[in-house]
Image (cartoon, rainbow, N blue to C red):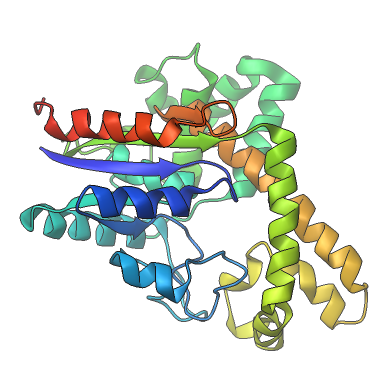
Length: 308
């Protein structure tokens, strides 16, 4: 059975740097699991690896689409599976690196996505709000009304399973019961990086400041100027928040603060998604200074173990 390693976690935690080191050590190549890094020209705002870093290890699903294109989780899934198949035939290891949870989940769960399907952060927030306000019964009521077929398949005492079923149904238009093809096509080891909240948020804030120094405004300006022809890329964090500045409706400082705030909220949603919906081996990079050596040891065992 194919074996795939993924590096996940909140924005700015250091996924790309770790993925690069691991791919170099374990004869691997990197598959970007980020929904925005596929776009050519969106380099600074998406925290894309530098040209030097991209040249150290082959990267896939980076700079493959124009900003005027639509890109769905189905596109990602089909392309990623083909890349993993090709690398396996070359006796190379696949490292999926990125923070778009639904993209990675489409691989791990082997979802049958049919036509187009896109992740939706607002939907996840809506369902988590329902859980906070109405508890698990509120989620069960939504699932009962929208996808009763899936109620027979999942643990109704587990809110993360209910949320996943509702999410899949709303995104794909089909029952979760129709999403899995029943074949476990690959074995996954998911590595999760996290950090103390204050340290992570400080890192996010500093990264936004660095992006400005690198020329973020020059990168965003053509996106703003051509926003009517850009269906998805214009909505990325780090881009949409600057539109009021170009429109003369807000000053630069307030727009940058909005980027920082939205990035922090996004990091929180990422952690919630991965913790609640996926089987991740977590490492706190502040509490475990030797986390990389521990991860390398586990990867060695994972790659050398038997196939189920």
